[in-house]
Amino acid sequence: MDQVSPAIPLSGVPFPKAEYERRQQNVLESMTRAGLDALLVTAIGHARYLTGYYGGGTYFGPFPLILAPGRAPTYVVREYEVQTVRAYSCVGQIIPYSQERDFAKVCGDVLRRYGLQNKRIGLELRCWNITPSDVYQLEAELPGMTVVDATELVGSVAAIKSELELEAMRNAMAMTEVALRTFEESLREGLTEVEMAAAMHGAVKKAGGEELRLVSLVFGERTKLAHGLPAGHPISENEPAVTEIGGVKSGYAAGLVRTAVVGRHPEFESLFALSNEALDTVIDFIKPGVSAEEVDATVRKVVERAGRRRAFRNKAGYQTGIHWSERGNMDMVPGVKDILKAGMTLHMPIMLFGENGHIVGCSDHVLVTEGGAKSFSSTPRTLYRV
Picture 1 (cartoon, rainbow, N blue to C red):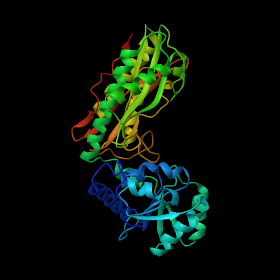
Picture 2: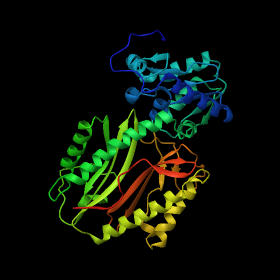
Picture 3: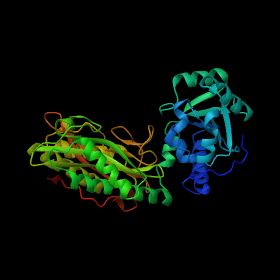
Picture 4: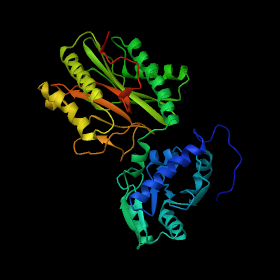
């Protein structure tokens, strides 16, 4: 099903085809080093990174992108979605299946046709969009196949950004900062979370932004909620407001966390100052060659030195890119020995718990360069007060 279709208005991929071919080649080289004969990419963000397709149809079942040396990239997708996948991806070889129960047979047929039925096949076993049932059915189709967990393979390639990707992230950050200015300028006693959310979305739309990803927006007592979504709750005097948002460009998000206070609140102000201190310390520490676990340990040392070890219950940061992040990508947590390299992009949200469970903090979004960490943002991390 690789016939050419007429162009559909306002479709296509955001980057030149050569960019996707470069990414695919890098993944193929990583597959060879890992001893894999083929890779089935099912994580939506990883597939979008390699093809351009945004993944809207994958709610139905797995849409594996099959990569194998000497073979054209092959997308196995629901028949209903073929035209959409063709319109929004750079993949020419698209094989359809009709119903969810047909996925394993059709995918297995493709792998047999490619001579891979008795080979080592990488699957993204810890990512979303593939279930144990999908794996069992595929193994039943190809009992001679050896399944290898390749969850981290595409993410390790995607960690290092091209200049085209960095430009998309800079554009995304510009919209994040539009929304943050609105957050500061709009905040006042009595304003509700949903009113604030509407103001921020409106400002980004007016500025020509594609999208604002709103991960969290909570006021007052609702700052006890991690990733709390906005409700009709007003902010009162001497209460905090916390938001985590990210502008989006071509699927790439650039997130930031900021905190404000209406009036004064000593505990929140103290936690925020500690969050900022930890961020300053870890950003000075980040450079190529240090490990993810060392980055995390640097944050924890600052918090522990302040006598607030239990305040930090999150991770120090994580790899970013398509769809903000993707399960299987690098986290900066204890035990992760992945080494930072120039060209990686990281979000560093240092969120701290107060004595009564309120969660307050701030973040930075940085590019790892040969000279250290460079922030994408020009918005100060100072606590905003109304």
